[in-house]
Length: 429
Length: 173
Image 1: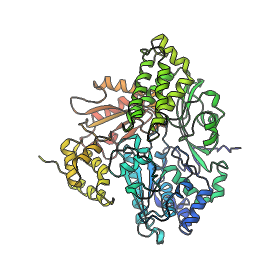
Image 2: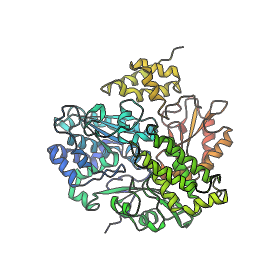
Image 3: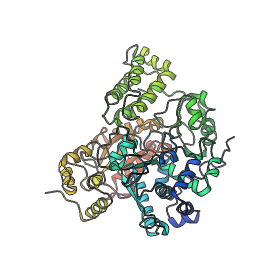
Image 4: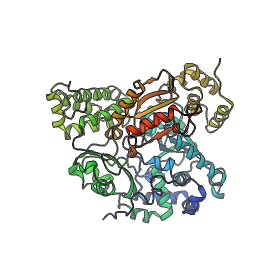
């Protein structure tokens, strides 16, 4: 049974409500800050990794890979320096959770980075922040400077023999750089084109050195594990999916925003209890549960629990747990068009199925929306999407294909009505 | 006149270069700096960055042209970037965009003749909970409405030459 928090805009991860912030290291310390880092530094790195493994923090960037397991992939005998890279290139449409840490509450993130860097033996951590977050970059640089002055970062972290520098690195506008190997290329100063794997970054990452890449929220979770212990962290979530989660809510709801609850929250609780229901109390037509690449669900999925396993069983993915809702009266083809246009725009152009295929998807969806498509084009669309799936170096191809396949399958009547009526029946085109 | 960083930008450049084990890694932060300093990245600006970092200009050009935030042509003093992605679309981003196009008399990708405003449709700004969103230079303007857009345009028109609060910390770039 999931305990529903009384005030879901506050919790272990969300310490600040909308409009509030904690930008002062002294204030962070007065709220229990740096306790987790001190605990970590008193442990052996191997014991620390075991504690994080025990907490089963599944990565909060969307793929859900357990953080502790990822760390254990680092080769034991490689003499090269190790790097920790934090992915704050938040850009999956619908997702806006990491921005909270960057702009309102940077210290739990930075403390989590220090703990993780100590665990894996990295002395430099790169925090890759999307370039649009100019304000967040300034906040982070200021927070890093406060920590350096207080001896929390630098040659001796809190008086220990462990040295750590955190470098805030700006992106420059490319969704693909949220893909971990493209992100590494980008730090190296190159266009963000994903790498073939193997080798995986843990073996040969940044400048071919062993590298761990984790999400912002994952770092905040690492801090919680040290603060409260792995057992207490697990108790905040599910046996296999440890910890609390930040849920995002956007689209046609009365109270969009960020909410914190244990993993396994139902969509109904998120939308109706936290979000206050839909605008105009209209019935729900579609739910994109975890960012624009996750397959669209219908109102029949309202009682599905939002955790990695159960949302997968319902035919979609938890992704970033950022749900975008649209109500009856919304043209699903018009919604899909925005999504398909996005992936066509963001394809790096490296793999033919994605470079050409995402353009095909956009053009076909556009012609359906504008009433110029031919009978049978829904099948052409599905065929094009299926030819991208699994045929590209990185997951952007699948991310472009999955919404197309799920929208056509769920809203097939709407798509066909555009074609037979030679116009958008919703007047959205 | 040959391009060159201001003394402030020069200090920032040194700070950037020191952070990395090699010069190529400093490329994107340096291009961001050059974009701000020179208003956009002309071919000359890219060559300048290549010279300062001692990198082949082909490396600089291929990276500079890959990233959409790095401007390859001049924008207005106030660069209005309207998010057109799904969450903002559901909250009326198309109407905001159309309103701005009509009011300013320009389309996406264009600059007003007086050089004050430029308009662009951009992809997700990661502020979906406060959609629709417009970014003006560095600053996010969230939960926008047609009335708020009108008030914003008025405040920018009368903003002092050094930028004004509506363009966010750092002012116009």
